[in-house]
Image (cartoon, rainbow over all chains, first blue to last red; front, side, top):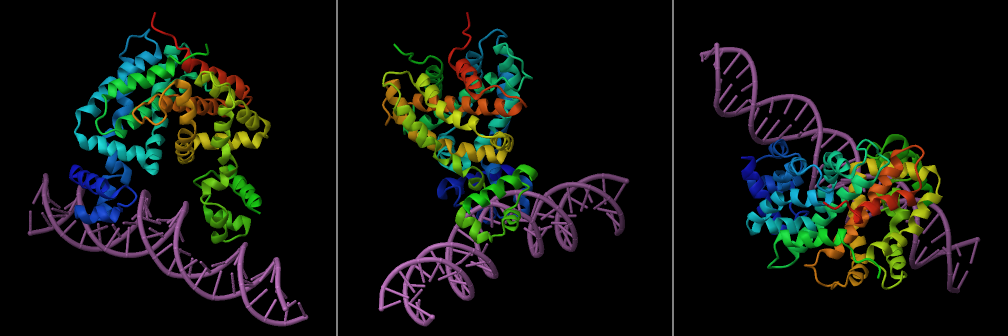
Length: 187
Length: 187
DNA sequence: TCATAAGTGAGACACGGTACCAATAATGGC
DNA sequence: GCCATTATTGGTACCGTGTCTCACTTATGA
C-alpha cells in the first residue's frame, strides 16, 4: 500500500513536476486522506525517494569491507560500485526521477540535507584510513574527502541525466573522481 | 533600516536558534509588520545571510584574475583568499553565525542550495583550465572539481567553528584542500 | 458477542511565504 | 501653503507543508 502510493507520487511528479504536485493532488489520485499519507510518509520528498534512504549505511558497510590499508579515495570508489550498479540496473524511470531531483532546487537541497548523515557515518572510517583522529573536530581532512566524494557523485548524476543516451555511471564516476585527485598541476 | 532588522534577526536567532525564531517574533522585536519584513527580505534565511550573497560572483572574478595556465585547484585555492580573509576579519559574531549555519540542517541545506550558483558561475573558467568543453554537460569533471572545492570550504568552516580557539581559516583550508588532492595512494 | 486495538479520516493549528488592498507618509509642481 | 502623485507601510486573506488530536470504523482475539 505504501508502495502503491509511492508509485502514484512518482507518476504525478514525473508528469507535473515536484512543486506543482500538491499533497492534496496525491491524496486525491491515491484515494487516501492527508492523514493516511502523512502516516505512510514523513514528507512529500520521502514518498519520492524513500527507497534510497538506506544508502549511507550501505556505503559505510561496503567501505568497512574494503582492505584496511586501501587509500580512502580508492576505497570509496570501490564501495560505490554496488550503489551505482543498482541505479543503473533500474529502468528509464529511475533516470527520469534522478534528473528531476538534480534539476529541482528544493529537491536537490533536501537531498543534500542527507549529506550530514553520510559525513556522520563515513567519517570514522575515512579518518582511520587517513591516519587522522576521528574525534578531532578541528581536523577537516576526513570531511573534505567525504564532501569531495559526494560532490563527484553529484556531478556524475548530473552528467548522467543530462544526455539522452548516457555513458555508464561507472565510466562517468571514474572520470569525475579521477580529475578530483589527479589534477593537472602547473607546468 | 534593512540593516537594523538584520541585526535583530541575528540577535534573536543567536539566542533562540533558527527554527525556534519565528518571523512573527522577528517582526515583534523589530516593531515592523510581516509585510514590511517580506518586502525587505525574500525569506528568513536571507535576513541572516544576505550580505554573503555576492560571494559567487566575487570568486568568479578572482578566479578569472589568476594566471591563465594555473591548475584549477591551485587557482581556486588562491582565489578563495580574499573571501576567507574577510570572514576572519569579522568579529566573534561571524563565527557564531557560521557555526549556527553549519549545525542547523535546514540552514546548511539552504546554504548548499546556492551551490548551484557557484557551479553555474565557476564552470566555464574551471572547464577551460581543465582543457574541457564548458558546454559539454556529459563531462562531469569541472563540476566535480567545483563540488570538491566547495566541500573543502564546508569542511573548513565546520572545523573552524568546532573549536573555541580555532586555527586560522587559511591553515585549515590548506589542510582540507591538500588532502583532497594529494591522497595516500595504495602502494 | 463483546472488548480491544489498529488503521482511517476529519478538523484545527502553526509556520513560511504570496498577493492584494487600504491607509498613511513623503515628494514635487503649482 | 496646497494639491496630486508616488512610495512605504500595515492588514487581511490565502495557499501549501507538516503536526496534532479526536472520533470513527474495521479487524482481531477471547
